[in-house]
Image 1: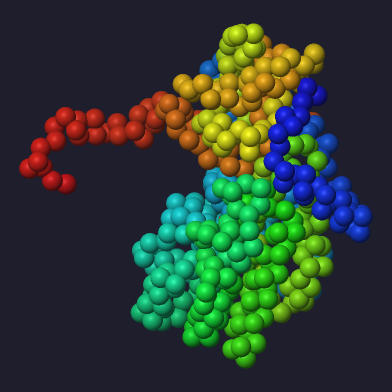
Image 2: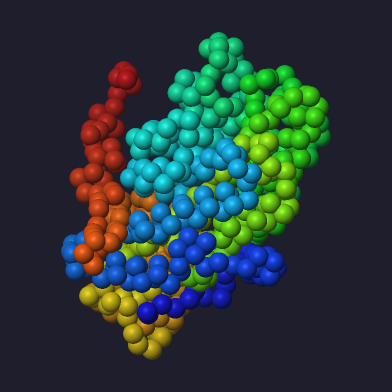
Length: 488
Ligand SMILES: *Cc1c(COP(=O)(O)O)cnc(C)c1O
């Protein structure tokens, strides 16, 4: 299928996670389908989608890059998440799975997940508005963010979305709003940081001693302060922790949840009431970007939690999860046309339309965020042929704009397609407008019931006129005519 694995410099997390999973897998036989659909079927669907996108003209000389979303796969992952937690939780346990919208902030996608029973975790006014546009009920929306403004907090409480305060100053703002506005429908919580350490990627580790998120529980006096904060506020009923995102091992995730659970038990014992009634355990399940195999699975994580923190699932606590990457990464694909194929200094280079604008993490930090690349021919068929070491370059004007460097792939030629796999989370959904490169169109695909594939527009490709408008086009004279006397 013309697919070559990424270089060997994958993050150690995958190795670590694999070791752990091997242990768990010995105890719990792994069922392939629990991973969220069969991995092999997903590859077949992807190949068909690339082919159909070319045949149906979504891709071509004038539309040289698209993002594709596999609706079947997304539904399967949502179902796997529900099944995994239902399998270990006492019957009747209230569980809200809230999709971390930042992982792929597209309204139709958030609505698809909502239709599959998944809520939304939002971290800005924009994400909140987007979740509302998608029709996510306020009762299934959780607002987390490190820098919520007073106006944002007021709106969230007026709407009734759940809010997790990040720090003592924010809690004081909420105090004032609760006092001023009387009862709110919002479930209110506090984010804590168990300070249990980092995973393999510093930038996505949130439980370090000096992380910017939450109240650091090991700081002097902090634990007592948290317990008192709950004792003083009958309306503060949730405890929230998110340990990190990609590169966090299953065991570190589980330790974070265990610490959060232990704190809830302590708060409830000290206050003598069921003060904390819900635990929000965050997201952060890693995706194995080195291969097509889905591991760890939601089922493995849920079973590990049930073993490590049995009280979590005995029905005394409601649960909230906030998965992003693990729900979406596998189900998104960037397809980019090879505009030119050239050679420089003996190196083959495919110059494509996918670079830093759709894969900023990979381009800026390639060792940490390698992407698997697959080669397809000009008809959208998986490319055969001997592997040739080549660079897969993007369209931006700096030399580091490479999707892959020195990668062995069937030789990409002019008019072929380079396909960046596992890009459904934190890639084409989160555009970066370097070089004023336009946002590519995003299309969802699903079987058309007739043996073919149907596509739906999820996001129109950005036009050049829109690029100008987003770049101050309406204010072209603003600086040349500026006078000190003019005020706005
Ligand atoms: C980013 C984030 C998530 C999602 O993390 P994933 O690794 O995508 O699952 C969940 N909760 C919070 C608070 C986050 O910041």
